[in-house]
Length: 372
Image 1 (cartoon, rainbow, N blue to C red):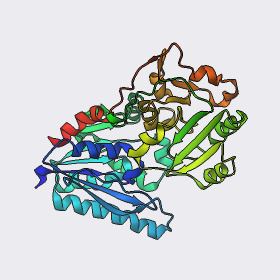
Image 2: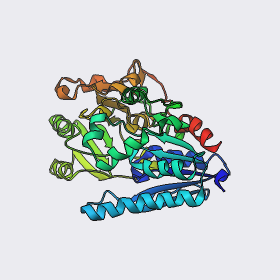
Image 3: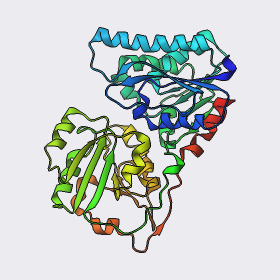
Image 4: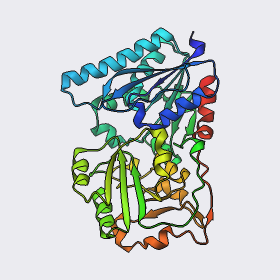
């Protein structure tokens, strides 16, 4: 049974993590005979991601993101981790992949206690610094100490960019990681769009994803948009927004800045085609958002939108464009008043260069190893 099974452990709900959804869908299209069991959680009031084929089974153990008391929270984690471990023991998969430290516990116990010859795969959606581990969630801190003892036994360990991998390895003096890989978070190849033509006014800007007043330039960007007196509109699509951000945005002029409920990830291309610029707003409050080239950068560009991102996002700088479009540009969000928007979006004399970002290509090495 184990030779025909792969297990994926992703504690956070799949619906807000496109890389996990893309991995599952790419697996489904490979015509493999191996079954994939995915252990995850649900999210309240959210759409449900579904695999393409019956070869992939998604098991949802509890609802994450809910506010709970200490005891209820403890019971939730126990239910997820024990339920996932039970599933691993019962099905005996030969290959186990987990995403991020919070998902690690069942995989580590399964490998160390129940199936020492299973191949362990790890992918980190995010980079966590030693300080964040020290001062963060106690459970994650404990799991990370156990992780360090299995890194030398892994068949795959990946980060999204080289800078994050370099930071990660610098945090692990004396620890050997034999199989290191870079796995960027690209959208599906069929998102690629030939969106030519000149800018139209009013300029339509879009933001998709989580929204927070503390970690993003929400207020700075909103104030700048309002100063354009209708020459620019800004639409926000989010499944994950803080109360403070929701309250702030809803009191802004609704004909200029509009807040929409998030949409299914695979519907994004039909939404994004209505805009000209996609914006990224992380203020760099932790290293993870400095050494960051987020999903949305590639998603915007693939759909033919220009992309604006803060100039402190070091991992995104390598994607800035020269004389081609869609234009990918870094801006100082503290000095937006100095931006010449007409010049920034002008495409005269620029050559169209389709974005070459495809998750099918990026995920191929991992999928091949998982299927082996």
